[in-house]
Length: 257
Image (cartoon, rainbow, N blue to C red; front, side, top):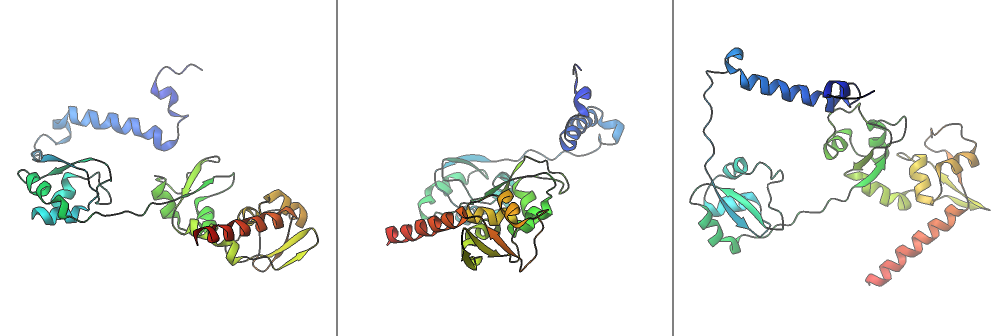
């Protein structure tokens, strides 16, 4: 079972990882034999000319370009790593066209600082049998958004145990569960919850501070499928957990006041 080269490991790697090395080797081969593949007649673009300036202010590329009197596209081409076209808060070495750096630095104080809203992602551990589509429906977001923030190339390839970042409405959805899905009534040692659109056993158990298995046992559920309008019994500790959450919320409001 000794693995002494890449091809011994090839079959054990994830498909995307396994294909990376052969593609890289193919590129090296083509570059080493351009005439064989008709690439020896291609005119190579000259290297970009630029100078670098140190910027310690978070500004947008469009504002910097306007200050220097150049098209925004010129800065975008020189700084492709700035995907959101904005500089970070810390010191950043910005590439600018030759002889334009001094102009930027002389007027940097007049350029308005920009702020980027911080993205807080909810984290979800993939469970056996889950797909990106079911996860997206659970958090009321889209498969494309989940794929983009997690750098997933194919929607059909996720592994159980992987932790995914959930963007967009997923966070707001979870935070609003307590308001939108208030239990209908109290009944002895348990509460009741009426299933609404978008609910799942996982989100319901999280809201009440209990577990999926406890809810399934109390309601004699053979699987995790729910129907809109279905009334579930929630174990007793869910009532305490919900009360604590409400108390903490009201306390934070008083403190801020």
